[in-house]
Length: 115
Image (tube, rainbow, N blue to C red; front, side, top):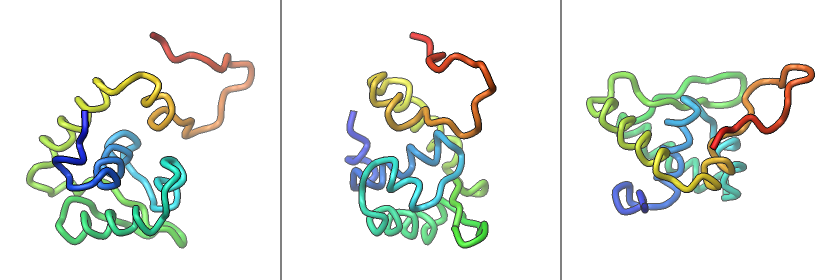
């Protein structure tokens, strides 16, 4: 499965997958996740924002991006990205799309991802 064909580049596809999965994201966080240059991700975020796919809000010194709620194809885009995440190899999903977003409860076991 190669979404770069649809979105024009691998970085564009990964940027949208990240935001679809986590609902929001900022440049440094997305770049760190994939191990790519922040400039590459920022270019994609800017392109998507200029074309109305994403919107950004300032949170402190960071610009946090999310799918534009008024984007005409929002439902279809999220459906396609969700399907892509479902058919993606399990190891890739665990590596990029299942990071902890909040602290772990004291005493909770570490590996709770079910097969």
